Image (cartoon, rainbow, N blue to C red):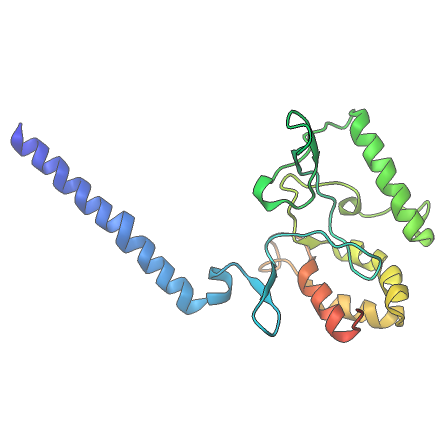
Amino acid sequence: MRDILLGAVRASLVTWVLCGLAYPLALTGLAQWLMPGQANGSLETTPDGTVIGSRLIGQQWNGPEWFHGRPSAITAPDPQHPEKTVAAPYDAANSGGSNLGPTSKALLDRLLADRNSLEQAQPEIAHRIVPSDMLTASASGLDPDISPANAALQVSRVARARGVQAAEVDALVAQHVVGRMLEIFGEPRVNLLALNLALQRAYPKP
């Protein structure tokens, strides 16, 4: 019995050292050496080192001068009434979708309201078919990217708000389109944080 217990303890210790210490430390070291930016969260910072976001986590962009991300259906407890919830777009502490089905009246009302807001901000897209990611929320609520078609439809609004030619903003969008991985995985996309930061650098607006 004693030999069995000692053998089990030795096996557990060896496994713990290899899988709990050596392997994680080796991978962490390799990641910091080969791709430190990605290993540390793909963070974007200001010149003074202040972190302003991650290219992996979406955030809310308000105002016509910015490109806007995919709608976020994340909710959080209402501070006034804890038994209820309120909208908390892009709250990274509470990732999730709405779970509303295609026959949901609440979903239809939200889509119609969002479509109306889009058309008020950009009358030129009234009655036009828009990319699905312009109106529908994702399962995570934290999408950092939008489709190139989505970005293209926002160019005119952003250009007007910043007082520049639409062609210049369109060229900036084209520079930030990321293609499929290995030409087959995923879809072309535009990282919103990278695009908006480049936009602010190229055409500053207070």
